[in-house]
Length: 141
Image (cartoon, rainbow, N blue to C red; front, side, top):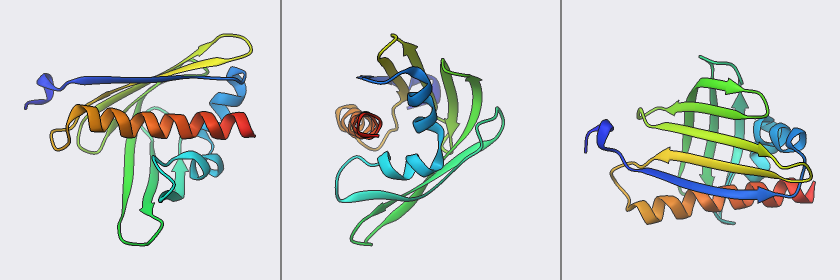
């Protein structure tokens, strides 16, 4: 599948918190390490984030049993504070995250280009699980 043929997948959640709190927890490496996981047997022991167009973020994903780890790295292509973030991950796929200020809550929508290894449903499930972990982190802090 060529990049122009990639499937776009959408995940979303509504977080019961104001946009300023949602934005801060999404982008602060100290919080990223608390929420960036798709299941309880994984964690993010390290994160760095340079939230500027042309700069990058890096999140280390690791199985808690130590069996495997990898770095998730992206370069920012668009940043509109409290509205939208776009980036390209190392394999060239594009990701867009929008933040919709609903007053007492914030809707977060992530749209990402699917990779060619795992079925789209599996990818959607993993990205949704990370987004659900984010929601839980924000609402408990």
